[in-house]
Image 1 (cartoon, rainbow, N blue to C red):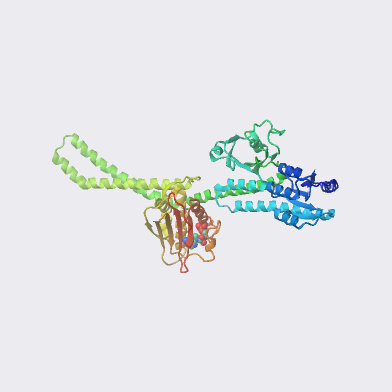
Image 2: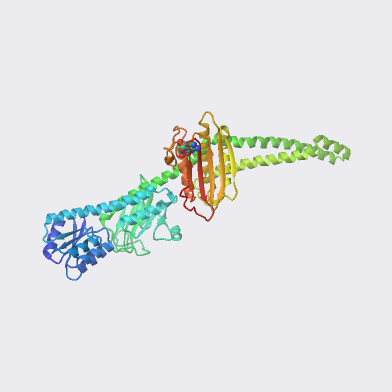
Length: 550
Ligand code: ADP
C-alpha cells in the first residue's frame, strides 16, 4: 500500500514534479502552497512524510516541522531549502527533521531520501510494537493482560481511547479494560453480540475502519453515538473459530482520522493481543490442572487421611451404641421400680464413674475424627477451587496445617516433619492458593529427602512475624540444589525429575502465587546439602519494603 505525503512549497514547479514522481510510485500526495495551510493539514490528517520548503509566505518550514512533530511525532519531515543556512539546519536537527535537502535537488537523490524516511518510519512503528509486545509477553500476571493490551494498542495506533472487550458465556461483550472508562462504568457495559459496532464486529469477525465517526459512516450510521469519537478501528480477536475479544481503538481528541494503512498496523496489534490473551488462558488452564494434579498425586494419601478418622469414628459409634444399650437397660429397671441397691449393682457392673468418663472420651474422639474429615474436605475444596482469588484475612499457620493435612500421608512415608509455628502470622490472601504453595514445598522437600539412600530425613516448617512481614520457611536435609540450577529454580517447566514425576510447574506457580500476594519467595541451598525455601508476605495493609540484601 502506498504512503501518504504532504508537500508544502510555494513554487508550483516543485509541487508538480514531486506530485508526479510520488504518485507514479503509488503514493498519495496532498499539495499546499504555504506554511499555514501545511500546519492546518497536519493537524487534520495523518501523513507518513511531510516535505516542506523552509521559506514560504507566512509560516515557514521550521513551523511546519514543529507543528507536525507536536501532533504526529512519528511522521517524518524532510525540509527543502534554497540556500545553505546553518541556523536553519541546526533548527531542523533539533526539531527532529529526517533530512535537510538543498535546492536545486536531484529528483532521484530526493526519492532515495524519501524511501529511507519511509523505512525509518516503518522501523519506528515496528520498534514500538516490539517493545510493547515484549512488555506483554514478559508479564507474569494474567490479570494485568487486558491493561497491557490496551496500552500497546494506544501506543502503536496513536489512539487516545482504547478498550478490550471479552465475551461471556451468555454472548455479551464486557469491558475487560479501558483507558477511558472508570471501573464502575466498565462493569456496567454489556453489549449483546450483534449489537452496536463491537457486537457486530464480533459476529462478522472482520475489522472495520470508521474514519469519521458513526454519523457519517454508511454501515454504522444507525448506531447511536453516546460520545464524540472522531475515528475508530474495531478489530475482532479470533482464535480458530473462537471469539476471544474485540479491540476498540478510537481517536477522540486526536483530529487525524485513521486511514486504510492503519488497518495493517491494527492487524499486527490484534495478533499480538490475541497471542498474549491465548497464552494467558493457557497459563490459567495449566495452573488449574497443576493444582488438580497435585490433589490427584496426593489422592492415595488423602484417602488414607480420611479413612483413618472414618475408621475410628465408626468404631467409636459402635462402642457408644453398646453404652447406650446399657443405659437403656438401666432405664428399663428404673421404670420397673427396681430398688436402689439393684440399680447400684448394675451401675457398678457397667463401670460406674469410669463408664461416664469413657463415654465422654469416646464422644470427644468421634468429634475429633469428624472434625478432621471436615477439615480435610474443606482443604480439598479450597485447593480445587479454580478461581480462588478472593483476598481475605488468612492465618498462614492454617494454610500450613491444611497443607500438612493434605500431604500428611506422603510426608510421613518418607520424612520427619517438625513444625515451629509462630504467632501473629495473619496475611491477606487466598487460603487455597497459599496452602497449595506449602503443599508444593513440602512435597518437594519430602521427595528430596526421600531421594537419598541414607542420611537424615528432616523437614522443618517455620512461620513467624518480623515487623510488618510474615515469614515462612520449609527446610529439608535432602541433597540440595546445584548452584547452576538455583537461578532457574522458579522457571516454568524447569525440572530435574523424571518426566513422569515432575512437571517443573510447582515452584513457578508457587512463586506466582506469592507474587500475586505482594510477597517474595527465595531459595537457599548451602554447599553441604539441604534446601530452604522462604516465603515473605506483607501483613494486612502493608507492603514489602525492598528486601535487597536478603
Ligand atoms: P517439579 O517438582 O515438578 O520438578 P518444581 O517446580 O516443584 O517442579 O521444582 C523444580 C525443580 O526444583 C525440581 O525438579 C528440583 O530439581 C528442584 N527442587 C525443588 N525443591 C527442591 C528441594 N527441596 N531440594 C532439592 N531440589 C529441589
